[in-house]
Length: 545
Image 1 (tube, rainbow, N blue to C red):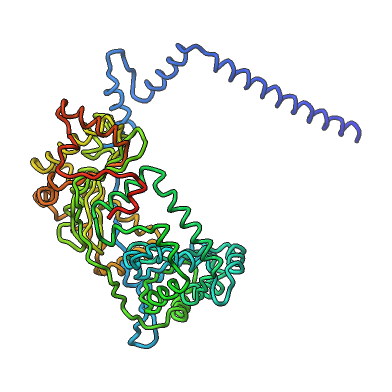
Image 2 (tube, helix red, strand yellow):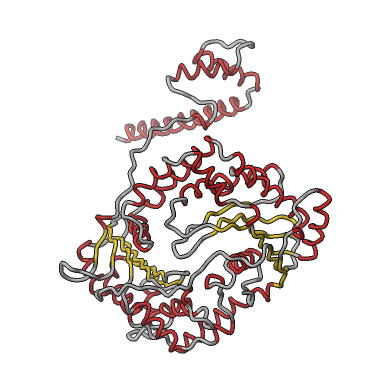
C-alpha cells in the first residue's frame, strides 16, 4: 500500500512539473514572437494576404487588393460609411385611439380626456397632466402669479397633509411630483414605484383639488422667486431671450415678465382664486403609463377627476408681432455680441408651416450642416454656434429667428454674411438635394416621439391639447413628402423680407458702435443705418414696453 501511494504521489508531482515547464516554454515563445523584427511581421502579414487573395506584387494597387478581399469575403465592403446600405424598417406611427379614454360615468361621459397605456418593463408609473391656464392671463401688476401657484401646489402642502409631512412622505417613498407653468398651460408630472399607486393617487388628488398654500411656504417660494429675478440678467443668453420677446411683441401680454413689485403684490387669496378658476373646470388632459391594470387605472383616474369638464376659454388678449424699432441693443460689459435677428410668421395651424419648417431646416435648423452653419461657422469661423428657428405656436403668431454670438468686432461681418445667405435663398431657392435631405431628416426624427408607451400617451395628450386631428402624426410624413421645391421657394419669398428683420443685440454698446463705424469702410452691415434703434441697460429691460 505504501509503495502504491508513493507511486501515485510521484506521478502527481511529475505532472505538475510538466505543466509548469509547458507554461514557461509558451511564455518564452510568446516573448520571442513579440521581439520579431518588423520585416518578419510584414512577411507574415504578406503570407496571410497571399493565402487569402493570392500573391500581391508591388504594382498591385490597394484598390485591387481590397476588391479581391471583398470578392473572397462574399460581401460588400464599402469605401465610405455613406455608402452603407441597410434594410428598411417597416415602422408605422402608433395611433392614439386605442389609448384614449373619456373619463366620467355612463355613455355620456364628459370628464377629462386621458391617454392610458400599460408598460410592464419596469415597476414604475408615470402620470402627466396639462391644464389650460398660462402666464399670458396673469393679471396686470401680478405677473408671476400662475408660476408661483404652480410651485406651491407641490410645496405648499394640502388640506390633508402639512407641507413638511408631505415632503417627508414623498421622499421616503422615492416619489416625484411637480407642477410648472408655461404661457398657455400648467403641466403636472408624477413618477413613482407601482407598489405605491394607492398612496400616489391620494397625494395627487390632494395636490390638484385641495392645496393649502401654506403661508410660510408662500413666503419661502416668494423669496426664491425674487432671488431668481435679481439674477436673471446675469448671463447674456437669457438676457437676449427676454430682450427678443420684449422687442418682437412690444406692448403685448407675451412681452410681460414678473418683477419684484409684481411678485411682492401677490397674496394668498390671489392664489386661491386662480386655483379655483383653473382647476374648478377640470379642463385637464391626462397621460398615464406604467405597470398597472388598464381598467383599474381608468377607474382610479375617474375617482380623482370625476367632475364634468367646463371648457376653459382663456381670456388671452390679442398678441401680434409688432416691434416699434428695428434694433434693440441691451448694454452688457462683455467682449462678445449676442444677436437674434427676427421675422414675423403666423399662428398655427397654418398651411405654410411645413414648407417653412423645411426652409428653416435648410437655412439654419440643421446645425453645422445648414447653410448658415457652413458659411458663418465653418467657412468664416465667426461663431461657434448659429441656428435658425421657425417657432410653432398655437396661441398667437410666431417668429422665425436666427441666433448667434461672435466677438464684437466681427458682428457687422457676421450679420452681412447672414443677410447674404437670406438673399441667396430667396433669389435662388433651395436645391433638390437639400430638400430631400431635410425631408429625410425630419421624417426620421418622428419615431423618437413614440419610443415607449410613456412617449406615446404624452405625445397624444399634447396633440389633444393643441386640438389637432387624431391622425396628425400618421399623416405627417406624407405631408412633408408631397411638398415640392417650388413650395419651399415660395415660402422663402413670402416670409423672408430683409426690410422687416429686427435686430436684438446684447453686448458692449461702445464696442458695438465702434465696430459699426469701422464696418462702413469694409462694406459690411452698419447698424447705425437702420432708421430706428433703442439702447438700454439690462436693468431697464425689465421696465421696457
